[in-house]
Length: 152
Image (cartoon, rainbow, N blue to C red):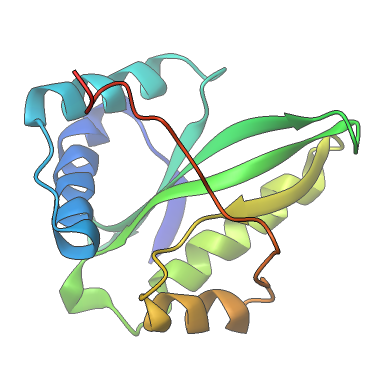
């Protein structure tokens, strides 16, 4: 298995995995054309973030996306881990761990990264255990939002 930066050629598989993840974790069907456009927009603009993919035998078997949040308190940037997905047949084989370790490596090479963050569904105990096993810890923050794409 190799972990590499995603390229525009990966857009279709990333969009499919994002749709599968939304359905599996949130029981939400995403608009496929909007989703594909969103993936392509990030791949075309490094200021938005980047994707890493895990590849095995020429097939993308896992992914994650990094986006950025500036912290004035820390004078640094948090990298948010998002759009995490591992193909069901490859779960439990260290795919996410390999992706996460690569993120840690990249973050340590970038002097401006002050930490890593992600959000996880409250009931997703399996994912929480994986994240905790990699050294992440729950915070005292609760996430809130207004989603303009779903309210109109």
